[in-house]
Each structure stands twice: as C-alpha cells, then as structure tokens.
Amino acid sequence: MNFADILDEWDSIQKSAGKQPQGKKQKKNQSSRSLQADYERQMEEDNNKKANPIDVWLNQHGTINKDKIADQAEQESLLHNRSYLKNMRPQAVIDLHGLTRDEAWARLNGFVSDCIRKNLRKILIIHGKGNHNTNSDPVLGEMVQKFIEQDKRLGTSGHPDRNNGGSGATWVLIKQNA
Image (cartoon, rainbow, N blue to C red; front, side):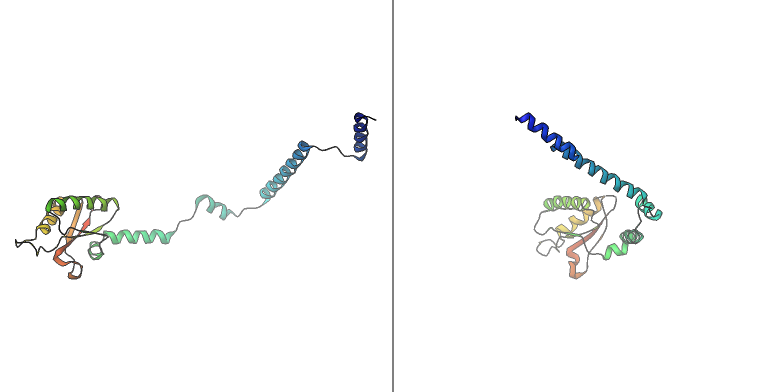
C-alpha cells in the first residue's frame, strides 16, 4: 500500500463520517463567518431597540449650563464696575526701586505689555517715596505718572492705602481693548 492509497482511504472515511478535512484557511473562514453573524445579530438587536426621543434630541443638540452662563455674566459685570476694580487686589506687581528713569521706563513698558498679553486688569507699580533723593520730589513717582498719562493702554490710576504702599506705589487699571 502506497501513500496515495492511504490518502484515498482516509478521504472515504472522512466523507462517510460527514466531515470535511479542515485546514487553516477553512478554520479562519469559519471563525470570521461566526464573527460576522454575531455582529449582524448585535446590529439587528440594536436596530430593534426603541430610543427615547428626549435622549436622541439631547444627544444631537446638547444642554446649556445656565448657571455657568449667569456666573460668567456676573463676573463680566463686576469687571466693568469701576468701584469693584478700584478695590480689587492688583493682579501683578512691579518694583522699580533702584532704577534710573530710562531703565524704569523700559521695564514698565515691557511689564504693561506682558500684563496685557496675560489679560490682567489691575497692576501695582512700586516706585518708592523718594526719601533718599536730595531733591524734594520723588523722581520715579513723577516718571510713573507721566508714563500712565502717555500710555493709551492704561486707564484710571491712584495710590493704594498705607498698608499697600501708600504714596510710594501706584495702582493702574488696564483698559480692556488695549
């Protein structure tokens, strides 16, 4: 008996048993068919489900958080209220002690630009009272006032209370459309 005879005999036994010999491709096809059938069955189940119309509408259009909108509107109205801005704490501080007029002017210009970029509304400029100056007028205090008057990006200014620097410091409100 040679190999061909053995193979023929094995084929006849398999056919009589009703089974086909399965190779790797046949097993792969069979598993992919079963996965496809599972997927189609799941899709049909999903299609037969009834969706709540409210849920469908909410998924399409979303919801509006009215509390968040109200809080944002309140914050914006506070920022427009001048008395609130005057009483709020400075969001950034620069100390110009020990600088010359030119150095202080350049630093102040860069500081204001940075604050505008960061969207800050109120800054504090510490310039000192000029006690160490031989003249009676403080040099940097006058320079800061001149800078504020000339810079169109800056608005209202004033001196804080004694605890926050008094006449040795100046707070400034930055204009919103600067």
